[in-house]
Image (cartoon, rainbow, N blue to C red; front, side, top):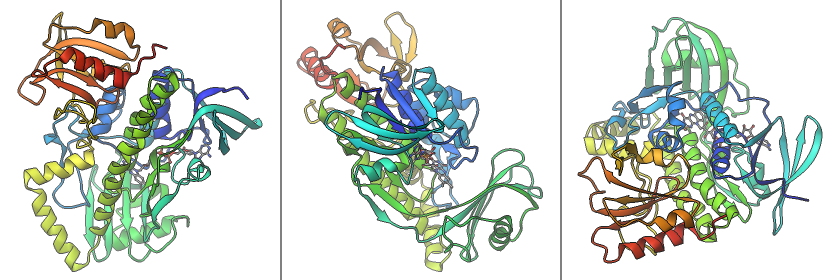
Length: 500
Ligand SMILES: Cc1cc2nc3c(=O)[nH]c(=O)nc-3n(C[C@H](O)[C@H](O)[C@H](O)COP(=O)(O)OP(=O)(O)OC[C@H]3O[C@@H](n4cnc5c(N)ncnc54)[C@H](O)[C@@H]3O)c2cc1C
């Protein structure tokens, strides 16, 4: 069978749509198959965190979300009394964006479609089978069963991932020890925009406004926390749990979405099996403490997209494609652990309450607050520096957005220069220019500029090769004895030598 697509993405949730956009941007023929007819109106995630806003800014998509959401400077860790203060983060996105997941998904879907990705809805993947040259996918849709073939398949098909199972990839971790209750409800007696956060021996309740009329209610009710997440939640049970944990049903008149979720915590043993990849909930699940799951999945899609495109175009060596797993796996292990820590803290036993009080005091110390905020915001993300590169403290790090002044005095931000999804060779204040790179490498933009703001760790940089996901591949200091040659080596190593 001919390869109908270069990549088939199975699962059109937020992560699948983001990945499809990244691949289409890189000129890859990509198709998303999604069993739902349309985006589900029930939004699990309500927040888009700083690092996700940064990566979306690198593609010009952030502004589309900002138009729909509400920026909030605060987050939380385990519902402690001291909030996380994102506004101190060293980022142009130093806030979280309050925006229902359904809206985020729609924006990403439109973006992917606009770039040429194909999206087949009401189509379910039934099986995937890989061989040396490609992957066969069996599908069921409105017109019956069909088969498609692609060079690669990515499973962004959520926690129960078919791709993960058929790839024979383990999903190690622990089952749920409790379930919590979620209700999106109209609470007529709560003053507009109220927030309720209470933890006691009667359980935990958090109520926050979604819009003028609707509240998101999360409850851990010890009397109901043994119930399986698959057992439907009735309005009567929801009301009873609300009264037990909060002391009132707040004039509950309507429940639009009722569901349960648990604290099962698992991670795929590897994110790749030859031509099959996993991303998002297909690769990791955890209790949704701190609102991180979707965010991390979108960041993974950004890490994988350009590498997979590079492998298909022929310029990315296998070590680069494998680095998707090696780079992301440890960060997601840390994510799983931080959600487990938060879950342990959601308990009203006296020693835990004492621990909560101690941690809350510690969080009022700015350095402590910065560290935890950076973790939840994923601003602390960095990867191992390339061992082949001459050492530089920036190598492997995430680059914050920096203000630049081009030779014609035009001002531009670094993230703007990443909109095309290519590598960026930034030549700072240097007269030498690698004009030849411009012709040699189609996946590289060469820009000569000066820093519009000085006084930070960029001051000694002669040139820097920035990856399409905004991490620094090779930064070269001004003291380098042969910068021209060093840049050449870095570009050849990262951008390959295939001109398409
Ligand atoms: C109560 C709650 C609150 C949360 N809050 C937040 C938050 O504030 N911030 C945050 O970042 N995260 C949050 N999360 C987590 C977040 O919702 C998930 O991490 C996110 O949805 C994962 O996205 P995904 O694209 O990987 O998977 P999913 O959203 O699960 O999408 C998978 C898609 O694949 C499709 N699919 C599955 N199998 C097939 C198949 N065989 N064929 C075709 N299609 C298939 C499904 O229909 C689905 O559309 C929360 C989760 C819960 C439960």
